[in-house]
Length: 299
Length: 299
Image (cartoon, rainbow over all chains, first blue to last red; front, side):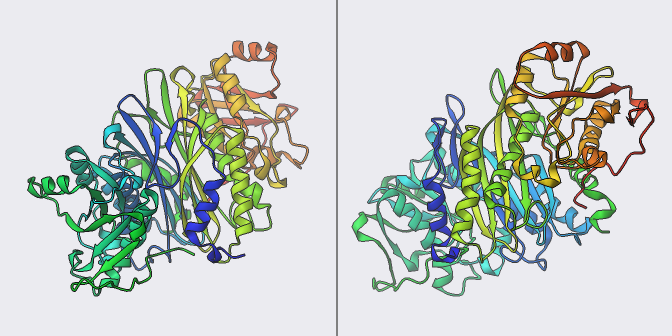
């Protein structure tokens, strides 16, 4: 049986059933990061992301931006849990015909982003590989009181995104801003009930929150802030790799957020509903939009 | 300029020059693991290793053993620093034609080894890729007083290995035992001055100790314990992926080790010398053996 019969998420579920963890693991596989015991006031976050030439980028892309993306994806995962990124290791699979100049560009993009976010690159591994492959593993720290998971959304919450959607395929997937500052502003000032970063598409990633929180959702398509490169609502609803934050908070906190001075861009796009409601997207006339493919799966 | 002009280790050096870390990083890139501040009595260790189909294994190999190897390499790195492995994340790059059965075998090998070594698999990432690629990142804990680096070897130390060498190409590279128990026995009972795991070949990995400790070494080839599958001394001196421990201790501690009951296999193979001595290998008549290629480089 080929993998596409069970899909990427089916395979992940299959793995998860066979994994047992001890009491040091607060949250294992299944959220943006693993959450581990650390000290009295903090948890440790742990995440990894692999990008592969021909899947996540091509050799026509600027390798500086590819290196930047490799770390940025993991930064975005730490942000989605409300944490601060701290230490990373980088594994590189390099084709035999790679040049030193290529590697200088790639590493500079990665190192510059690390510097900007005060992340320590502390080690790595180099292997030969048929296609350029970069895997970054990142450890972060989160105050216990700031930890946000996918599982805390409550019916009545407002659903909010941090920026515009649908610009990924026009280049945002290489130039996105990991929303670490935004996430830290949110978790330090408000009660964020659930959060995820949009890597596989708004509907796909929202579905993870809904499933793990056992709730439904109403999304109002006209409210979705769209990237200037976004062509249609399908891109905004299902386009992957915008790497914006998608989160839910009480109405009370959303009103407070709207009134609090900040330099960030947050837009409410819908409401968390009881589980039986399912996931519905409404157009400007409040008619239900037939759902497109929810988002990206590797298989 | 192609990568093979500067080689794998040249590229690593090039990267390292551009990396700056803060005071939380005790040891960054350049040892078996990164060493990070953790709590009063312990450091945290952090390492990653990528294996790629066609480079580190083939699809003719038993995928159960391939999954086992993927984690085992990182366990061996934690062992080489004297630590205990704790939490791992796993990135998988999977060809489109992978089967569910393949993935069951691969994951079972990895999960079984994790269980044996009490390692928590806490997350991962799945991507499509042209060749099966597995990257494991592992966090371990080491008592501050137990930490062993490559840089502590002293002239006069005895050089010791744990187990037999030269069996890798006959299959040991898929079946090796990560020497976590052996390393913990050593660091809890003795003063180990320097340690590394043999992944690229005895001489290559010994060279890392020598360079970082600023010392030389005399190796007595007849003393090297050879795997029953080992055909010639070249395999024992330069064959990669035996994943045995290579370490140095004072004569006094080596005598104590010889007299202390244990179920492990440790053999002295040479002596640490002053830096000017360089690295020399002697045969049974005390003649210098012309050094073979030191070991494996990816480029």
